[in-house]
Structure formats: C-alpha cells, structure tokens
Amino acid sequence: MAARDSQFPKLDVREATKVYHTRSGDLLAIDRCSLAVEEGEIVSIVGPSGSGKTTLLWSMSGLHHLTSGEIALDGQRVDGPHPDISMVFQDANLLPWRTIVANIRFPFEIKGAKPDTAWIDQLMHRVGLEGFGQRMPRELSGGMQQRVALVRALSFKPSVLLMDEPFGALDAFTREEMNHLIEEIYLDTRTTIVLVTHSIDEAIFLSDRIVVMSARPGRIANIHRVPFERPRSLEIMGTKEVFDLTHTIKSEIVGDQISKARNRKNAANLSKAS
Image (cartoon, rainbow, N blue to C red):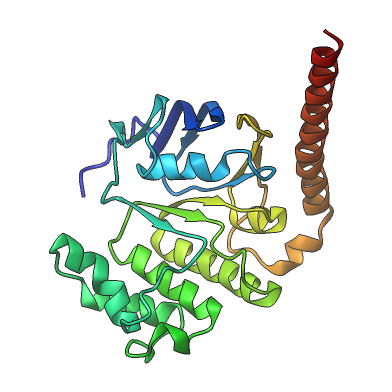
C-alpha cells in the first residue's frame, strides 16, 4: 500500500457528474457532486430511490466512469478498480459451486496473488464463521452469506470499504446484528467506509456523517454530522437527538421529492398550454 499523504482527504469526490446515454435519451444521474471523506470516517449516503446514490458509490469504486469531474484516493485520481478500494454489494454474489473459503480466495486466484490465510482466518472468526469454511453457500442463511461477502471484501486489507445497501434484504434482527458487526470491525481496523442505505436508522447508528441526496438529478442536498461517540448501543436510537435528526432527514428527502414532482407537473402544464 502506498504511503498516505495526509494533506489530501482519503476519498475526494470533485464535481462528479454522470450522464447515461439511453435509447430514450440522455439521463443525468448525478450532477456536480462534491464530497471529501476523511481517513477513518464512516459516511452514509441516503436519498430517494433513483437519486443516484449507487451511481455515486460505484463511481467512487472506479467501476463507473464519470462524464465529468473526478474522484481521488489519497490525492491520486481513481480511473478504474483500485486495489485499496473494496466493495460489498446488495447481493453476496457467492459462486454456488465453490466452498465458502474458496469463494473468499477466488479474487486472489484471478489476480494471481497469494491470500493472507491468517488474516482471512481471523476475519472468519471475527464475523462468527469459524468452522464454516468448507460449507457451500446454499448451506448458509442470507445474513451469513453477507458475512462471507464482508470477509471477502476485507481480505485484501483495503483502506476504503464501499457498501451498497448490503443488508437491505435481511430481516430487522439480522440487520441490527450486522450493523453492530460493522461497527466492531471498524473499531478494530479503522477502515474508511462509505455506505449507501435506505435506512435512516442504520445511517445514524453507523455513521460519522450522513449525506442526503436530492431526487434526480442526484445532487448533495445536505450533510449531517452524527453527534454520538463510539461504541454505540441501541439505546441511543430512542433518544430525542435521534428522533430529531431522523425527522429532519426524512423531511429533506420527502420535501425535495414533492417539490420536484410539483415542478415537473407545472412544466408539463406549461408545455400543454403552449
């Protein structure tokens, strides 16, 4: 891993704009988004469906190329997949014909790299999968499969972990368990994390800052700092501070959706009138 230059943010998004060219015309997904993520931060991105949250996250990973603007890691432009940036997707994406440990080692095989088996064993123990290495994916619950995906993402010892709604398909109890697990791993590793989620509660529990995206075209409408020390307990979720912050973020999201829907309707009426 290259030496870190502390004069730069860990991850720096500068005027990021992405236009998708479709058969029905151009679609502006994100528009001039700028965000500096500091080393060791957990930042969540929330917003209405279609607001470009995933587009922004995938652009940070180097998997999507921007139309304009740029993204930098430690001051160096990200032009494609980067060895210091790892990603956990909405689905665990495990190969059903390979064992759990073989799934974790598969990216190393593709790269022709030697896996750090001691580190992988440590991660397996940390997420409660010790002894499951020779099981097949079908033998694991959805929550356990996502734990495997998390181990696979961390097995490279990335400096940045990106997570795209990784627990959205899990039941509420398992989701809470995974949130606690993410925080515990973060406290152990201090890995910089950027998380896309539809759950404001999840964003508040995990994050140092919460980025609110506007309805399409996706722009950064606001950024909220979460005023709780770590480690966090579920008791904070019943506090007035959490209630007020949740209400504020929901109001920003819903209010923006209503405002843009009203503008679209007015534009359509004007078009008909002319």
